[in-house]
Amino acid sequence: MNTLDIASTDAKHIYNFWKNLLDKKNGGFYGEVDFNLNIHKEAYKGVILNSRILYFFSEYYLNYQEKESLVYAKASYEFLKRAYDTEKRGLYWSLDYQGNPLDTTKHTYNIAFGIYALSHYYLATKNEKALDLALSLYNTIETNCREKDGNRYYLEEQTKDFTFKPNDELSENGVLATRTMNTALHVLEAYSALYEASHSLAVKKDLTSIINLFLDKIYNPNKKRLEVFFDADYHSLIDLESYGHEIETSWLLKEASDEVNDPLLTKRVKKVCLELVESVTQRAYQKPFIINECENGRDDTTRVWWIQAEGVNGYLNAYQMTKNVQYYNLALEILGGIQEYFIDKRENSEWFWDLNGANIPSSHKDIVEPWKCPYHNGRMCFEIKKRLSK
Image (cartoon, rainbow, N blue to C red):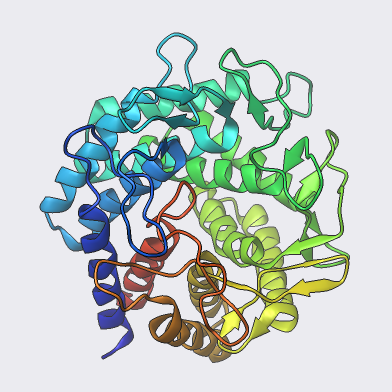
């Protein structure tokens, strides 16, 4: 089976798993499947998870023209509208299993994923109301989720009324961050998709601003890595390297610069992207997988599902940028490892969350939960198809 056939088979496997989680009674999709494959039908439903499901089924249609996928995309779209705060704008963090607001926190990261999903849904359906909602969320970020001073840096976590809250949702490793690389990355990704869908010059301007934020504040040229957690002025709070986010950024940043199409910016972006790829290869690649992270010089060698999917995307992108066959081979090695170890061969399952050094599922984490979704692995299949079809 060639690589394109593998991607198509994997996409269909993911598709069949997630369509069976449609909650026909309460709307949306069930929010939890535990390691033993029990569906928890009364688990709360994370809005990030729902947005990623909307992205997956929309993009599945765009790639494979299977009309049934739009049924599931529409179900997710209708559920996402229930997470929209019609009074204060923005998206809630979570809904209960019946679709009622549960955690009304407003987080820039979460709103960005709504923009991303709605933009892809619009590209699949030409539903103008979906694009209008995406643009409304974009305006919410620009109005309520950025500093009002000249720097215009991104805020993180806020209340329903858009007042400050400590950034508990996206802080880890013992720090409480005022700014995060992760939020900036997914605003960048969201605005790339929104610009493709809307061709708004305002979106293009703000997308350019985020690219420069990565180049000037988040990327560390001396260490050739991304810093992860920051204070209010983008001073790094911790010696931490997140290998998955670096390989993911290496192609999302390139994709964003392609949308902007500024030759000088593209040149700067290409240099940073290739430095990130080479850094991950030298520091984190342990055949056939990329390890998790390095904190204070100590590697966490856990193999995490989403990192491997982004590894395939990042290496295919690097190959297309350079024609260096080493990168193509690295993508194939990771893909082979995914086929052998990450895809759960049990009936009615999908991918394991993580593996230990012996490539055995290590944590017995849920197969589905608010962060475990068809976004990274589904997108890997779509990226393989798009890139290798060329």
